[in-house]
Length: 126
Image 1 (cartoon, rainbow, N blue to C red):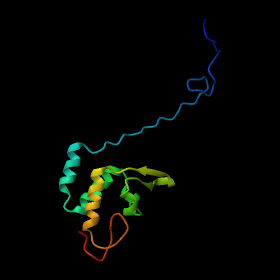
Image 2: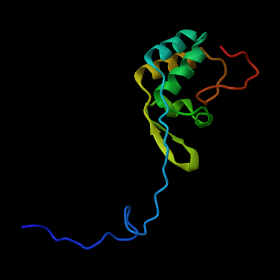
Image 3: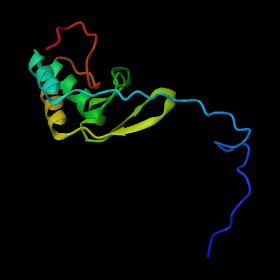
Image 4: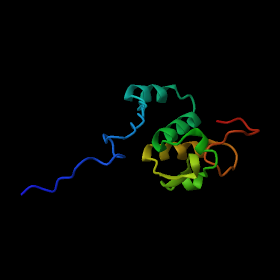
């Protein structure tokens, strides 16, 4: 038993008689860092701070602009959220390696700021 057949396609559907062609969207896929690139970046880190920042950005996939309001106490729990473009909330879960470097950096840094990464300070950053 054959299913029902219909006459012609709806004019608004793709391929219909009077259908307007759909715009082509070229989505370019951005390539991430290769394993070798990641290791080269790790070796290029000269301080605990640089390594902590690199591991954090790598593990959390946060943009630099999304990190300026993050508190150390929020991130070190292993789950935090960031505000993306357009006020969207995204949850992040940094790995154990990232948390290890953040703890190491937090112990060695000077000052008593509650923010995750110190940017401007009167003291020398370590």
